[in-house]
Length: 225
Ligand code: 5RP
Image 1 (cartoon, helix red, strand yellow):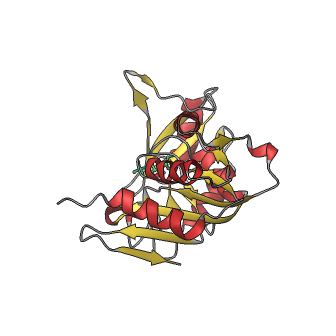
Image 2 (cartoon, protein in one colour):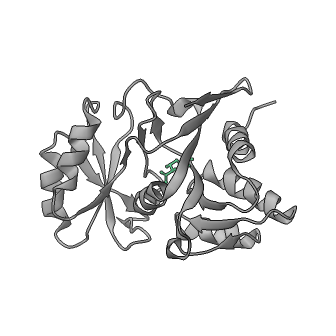
Image 3 (cartoon, helix red, strand yellow):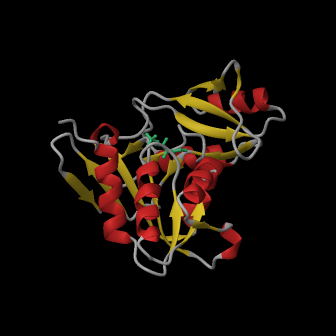
């Protein structure tokens, strides 16, 4: 039988980190989907949880499951956020944003006491950016100029498209997927990207993560912390 790695990683994380009365951040994507489902089960069983969604899609799924979803401004802080990732290192540095929700995901992660990542083994890498492009969210205004400044950091930036149109985020921005030949110094790159006018946020999540649950095809789940 095929193991559903996304599901077992998500369920382990929820079982270990979500407790009655908590404020919980809900991630976005196909792995976070199983987090939302598990949280929905806990709520249906009577657990009192208040949740903040990292995207409109997550909010819709959570509300359909009967989960109480509030705005981030309505809670003092979040006890835990559980989210997926596109790449994870053993130092718990991440690339996120292939699902298009990186800005809200980063704000929610930064508002959480614990940020927990759930992935299948294909996402665990030695170093960031060798395979996966780095998503960078940019303002629509002047985005071609912003692209040129991003590419000066040593990458090829491609405007993300969907159905023949530029993909638009929940925040009304575009995303450039930036292919580096590996990211040797993610802190330096992040500081450079942060100074480019028009860049809203980048998908590097450095020093934000408490633990990662990595599911393997043999059904085991490794916790990295
Ligand atoms: C969305 C994200 C997702 O967490 C990331 O893309 C992983 O998604 P999936 O679990 O579907 O592979 O960062 O912005």
